[in-house]
Length: 320
Image (cartoon, rainbow, N blue to C red; front, side, top):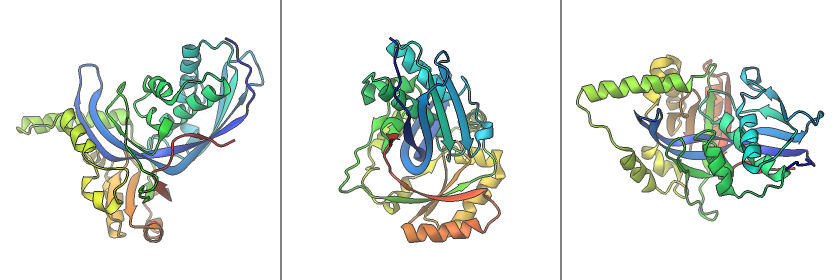
């Protein structure tokens, strides 16, 4: 099927953070047992999708903004991989689209920017090609690209259980939804996810050697399912927020520990590393408190950028 694209359209693409992350042992399939609670936040990339100038070219891409010099704007990018997978799934010939990506979400920072952009490609192409796939179908395709991709189709709050496994939606009642106020400390450099997990394997092996019994993924999932992540005030959930990759990342980059301590000294309710690093998350009571924490951290020569954000927010949206 050949599609004539009417475009352009513009998409608003949120970042995510992990309220909870527990990485377990390496499985036989090469992936790790992992349980995550996602929250979409108001730090946004933007993507414009329009017809290619040359109709004989399937996909082209440009990227500008933060860390864009580190992003491959070709077939290696998850955006084009997602578009190709959707085109193949729907039998679309000569799709001929251009993706103009403007980055505000830093790379290798634990905020899911690459996965979010891939989700935006799925939603945008589905709209332009009038393929009429529903959210569940898009999430299934997204799961073939990366474990975080399906979450961004809906956003808000969700529980992830690893690669090729479904994201479990968390009920968020608009009438009782609580706003979380975050300050994000963007570190000068990122960390490779692969390197963090390799180091995590060493930590787990060491703990087993000392006789520690590791909790199963089922136990972790049951723990996460027992918490009302979507409708409980943030300060109540502080004891439940954790990331067991934080210690690993601090060993790989000692500045992460320094940064997290700076957040505690600035009065944050909680200092937590995002995902596999290196962004540091600082939870505030309210907007005014977030501004105080942000000003204090901005005075420290630790971060390349300090930004405020709130959550949860909706997933990828077509805004024009």
